[in-house]
Amino acid sequence: MTRSNKHTDAKNNTKKIVLIVVAAILVVIAGGYTYRSTYYANRFLPKTEIDGIDISNKTVAEANALLHDRYSQEDFTIKEGDNEWKTINLAQFGLQTDFTNELQSLKDEQNQWSWGMAYVSAAEEKTLDNLSVDQDTLNSETDTIQKELETLNEDRTKSADATLEKGEDGFSIKPEVDGDAIDVDKAVADLQEAIVSGEKELNLVDYVTKPSVTADDPDLTKEMDSLNKIAKVTGNYTINGNTFQIPRESIMDWLSYKDGNTTIDEDKVRSYVASIGEQYNTSTNSSTFKSTKQGEVTVPAGTLSWTIQTDAETEALIEALKAGEDFTRTPIAQGSTDAGSPLFGNTYIEVDLKNQHMWYYKDGELVLDTKIISGKPATPTPTGVFYVWNKEEDATLTGEDYASPVDYWMPIDWTGVGIHDSDWQTEYGGDLWKTRGSHGCINTPPGVMKELYSKAEVGTPVIVI
Image 1 (cartoon, rainbow, N blue to C red):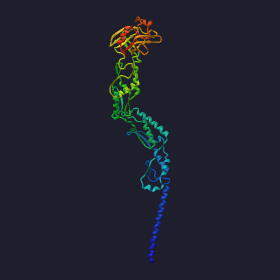
Image 2 (image 1 turned 90 degrees about the vertical axis):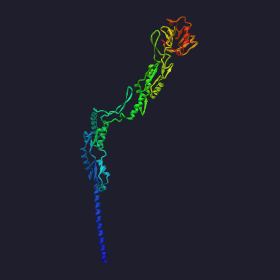
Image 3 (image 1 turned 135 degrees about the vertical axis):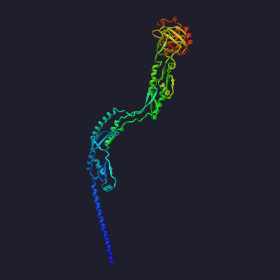
Image 4 (image 1 turned 30 degrees about the vertical axis):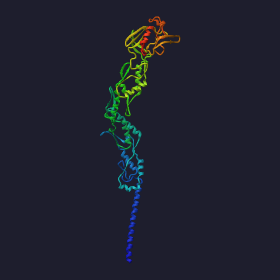
């Protein structure tokens, strides 16, 4: 019994010793780990790298010294393809090589107690987000490079998109230009950014501009077809009996293409229509007339006239063009006659004030002629292209100091001038108009006036020269 107790006590003593030893070891280990953790309070953990530089176990100052040595020797290379165009030391760009603040921030982010795990983990790769650069120095250096690149570009071809160009018969596609010029502004901007972000190389090939629209671009083809549908329209005007074509180059100038649709510039069309009016409006332009005795003469505008309605005709012309089909049209006009037909043809009454004579031609044939008396010098008969706008029998012509009954009255203007019989006149022609002239009307022998009244219709042109 006694022996057994002694054996048990021995075993218990052994266990106690082992536990004490283990505890002592753990205390030593814990103390050592704690001591080592305290070490890493001011140092970077094992396997810490910045931009490929091992800064394990380094203080911020020591790591900063390593990085300073590294970056103070760094170069930045500008290449063109595989060829080196220029290499410049980063310090020349104003690179600041004191990274103390950023290194301190990186160190403060680490957990000093995790140094043990750092040994068995993969390397901790860290980067400097942005290098510190003196901006004035950087701007100065890159301005120099920009000038050198601009000089380089002088002998190079700029790329250009395929575009539409105008020709005599419409629009065609002008092919793109695949040039070799560099986008200098973008290259310089990216150069500054690359230096600040820690990159070491820039390739000029990446900044050679390329056309974004090529000749086979379907949208460009669609645009061309849409424009040509209108540009190739043959548009004609018939005015005063003459037909002329709207210049194709004018139509092309009116066209533009936006948001997938062809548009016609209303202001330009209106300007064109207005120019036609300035040239052809018979309300403001004189006419050429081949007279019986005076030959070819110029006759001012009168009551037989028209004026193009610019706004209405602009709208109508645009609609005609949009239809995409050839057309011939007469402009919308306001007046006493149609703008499309000649102002006067082979049927007309001619009043020659110089020769005090009147003729009536119908379909080119002389129907009658007679001497007349026109307005006296104080109230002369106006010249112009007029027309018989009414016929009245047994009318009384009145004025401020007269009231004259007549058998036949054919007014030709809006002021009271017309052709009528004058039984109070005993003779006609010569210079009688100077002493026995009318208030402006054309005094006609009664017998001739009766015949003229019966044969001349309302609307007959009256050319007074």
